[in-house]
Every structure is written in structure tokens, then in C-alpha cells.
Length: 290
Ligand SMILES: [Zn+2]
Image (cartoon, rainbow, N blue to C red; front, side, top):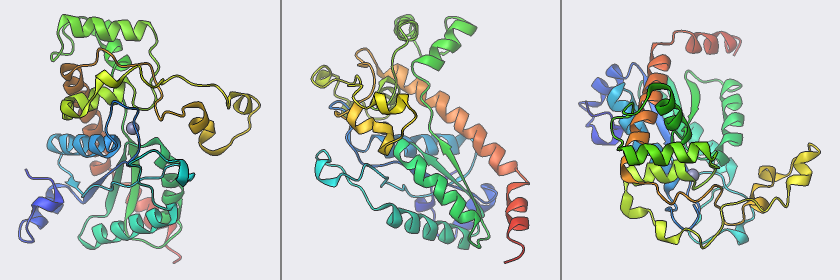
């Protein structure tokens, strides 16, 4: 069925709420540089795509994209095209959107987040929702990256042909990267695969090799003594907003397979959240005194 909020009419919307059993999912990302080879909207594009794919496997209501995420606050140094909002604005906006979802009859809200920089404030947001009177619960799930490592592990465990979308050559690529312990992080092979599967025209592999995705290790000495600075020193260690080994031989087939595998994992989480009878009860019990 049509699972996207924005594509329903007022007349048909209640059928979606009913079929979704009151579960509404908000895709979340950010707008930031992803090396020179991936688009600024990488995170929200993949979050939105995977949420929709998973909603076709397990019906939930797909909320409009929450496009803007938290990015380092050193605003003057941000690369061209970056958009960042103050965390206070994001927290208030998200809370008020959740209230609108609840007012429309859905009391279980799940955020599908694809941007690592959102993790910190989302954790604070969940606590805030817990400590503020509301008749809904909020959960978070983070987008995983099946390519190349977990796909290679599937091939090693179940043999050639276990991922039907792939050719023998694709299998060799994944197994080689796995064996070489390819580094994944930001704008890495995993993210490149997703964009290859969604919009290959937005991937620019010819721009690889111009800026490095390897760490400068400049901030490592702080981490080694257990000292934490903003983002764990990520911006200093990865000044090109690129963290990973070059995904030189990534292709569309690998991307489509990675999307399907991740959508299936996420759909299972939707199912567990839909069928759950505890979280709303626990929430109500905790808030009884208010
Ligand atoms: Zn990303």
C-alpha cells in the first residue's frame, strides 16, 4: 500500500494509521560534504530510500524527511553546501513534529537516522521525551552498511550465489575488500554502494584519489589517554570529510543488493516495534505521577 504520509488524502490517511498499527517512521540525515565523490544529501537520501523500501515490506507510515542534522559548529570552516541548524532548533522542531504525529493518531515514533553526528543529540532527545509529559514513545534506529564486510561474511558462510543480485566478479570485489579489512567510515564503500543503488549519476568515482580518506592521526594522542574533544577529533583527523579506503570498484549491482539487505533488516525492526506491547506501557507507568 501507499505508505508515505504526503501521498495520502485526508480521506485515506486513517487507513494508513490503521495498517501501520500506530507506527510512524521519520527518515533523518543531514546536508554535509561526503568527500568529492558523493552528494551533500547522501545521508538523508539513503535514510529516506531505505525507510520507504522497508515500509513496503512491513507497513509503517513514512513521515516527510527530517533533512537537517547536526554538524560541527565551526561554521566558518564548513565546506561549500553544508547546512546546519542549532541543536536547540532541531530538538524543538523534532518534538513538535512528534506531537503532530501523535495528534494524527500514531503513538509509536521511530527515527531512522543515517548521520553519525545526530547520535549525540538524539540520545538527549530521547531522555527529554522521557522526562516530558507525552502520550507517545520515540525510538531510534541507525542505518547500517552491509557493503562490503557483512555481505562478504554472508558469501563466506553461505557460498557463492547467496546474494542473488551479484555476479562472480562482484563477489570477488567484496571478498577482496573484506580480506584487506577495508576501512569504512564516512563517504566510504558502504555509503557509496547505497548511492550507486539509488542514483548512480550522483556518484563521481572519477573524483577519487584527489583528496584522501585516510586519517591524519593528529588527534589520536588525546583519545589514547581517554581525553575527549568535540566529535572525538574526527574533523581534525579527517579534514576532507571523507573517512575510508577509496571505493574504486563499487557498482550498481552491489548497491542494489546492499539496499535490499538493509531494507530487510530495518523492516524486521519495524515489525518488532509494531508488535511490541511494552514500550508504551512502560512510558505510561513512568509518567503516571504527572
Ligand atoms: Zn553519510
